[in-house]
Length: 113
Length: 109
Image 1 (spheres, rainbow over the protein chains, first blue to last red):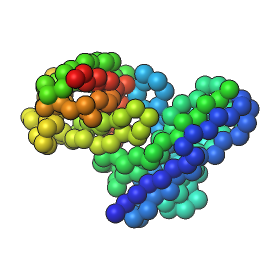
Image 2: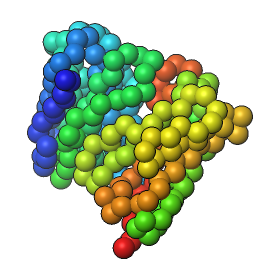
Image 3: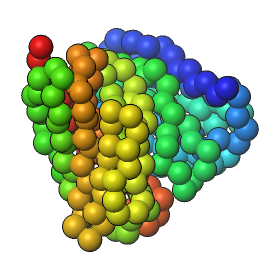
Image 4: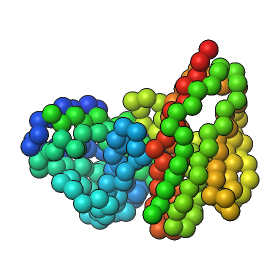
């Protein structure tokens, strides 16, 4: 069966510090991978998606970046965090671009102080 | 622009029935999805509608009217564990998911 895992679950970071969130998927090959952010009272905001190794599409211009160094690994990074980067970050995978059935990781709650 | 509207919060009684509505305006339509999200957790998939009509899955049913840009999620025989947020999402013509802000459902004994 397929599983998805992301970490860390919780982190508190000062403004201007770097960020790295990691996500891995097991039990499937060539998944579509996504990074979402969820702010309180707002819908899920798609940040990045990837259809293959090294292929990253950015949906929102910001100080975040994503990388896919391996087929089942997706990393969200920032060189310098802003207060507005606080939120609940979710990694997800799907079997194809035309399926809306997403499988989410446990989520990572980031607080920037 | 693209827009998904659903009520912010609803309250219902254990054992009762509740209907959560979702209206949408999107660039094209390739299906509507409902997800359940418990507080502090990730969303989990509940249902998918691409044709008009009702899809039933146990205590949960989802209805779609494409001409009206409207869907609802019907929860029967409510249990305390159904307390969660319910997210409506529409896949547009570019196969991108557009998400509503979610409806927080509170179940009272």
